[in-house]
Length: 111
Length: 113
Image (cartoon, rainbow over all chains, first blue to last red; front, side, top):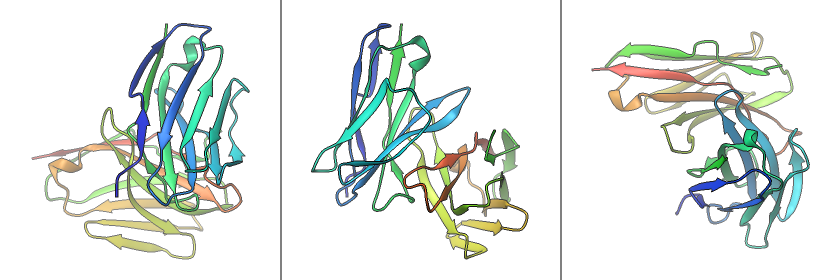
């Protein structure tokens, strides 16, 4: 089976812009979770989608949003980018939610 | 407030010896625990997991032990190989919080030939 794929792998944006990241889960997986990894905070949970519904959300501001499509692919969007949003954004898929398999991540740099 | 703690930022082990990575948690609602390995510029790779109804799970060179009363789990790697050098993350989940893994800050393992 192909693994989790994320596009793009690298992105440079300017403060105030918005960005959309994409994730394709492992075939058959219906749960997609998103995480932010920074050196100071480690891996932090953003949100999780299952069958196109957001089931769970972490403690991030409303500028961070996501959605899931009927084919289980997911996107996350960050609006009004801030310097502190620079991070590695990781997507993980699972069959039901716990045993998660991660993609390679998207490295976002905000200047 | 960290719910999952990996108190050793780094660990150095000789090739062929045992590597023991430790993890403590505070939330008694956690019922599923996982270990991930991460190389630089890659996403975490799932290694092994354990449910709270068990106290041990083995998969090849990797064994995870869970001590619920102490809220402690450990990952044993035997024998350690240079290719095991990576950052290891402990993660925990509670059944009521779907898709949300709580991660420790990681332990960097170096296996020296």
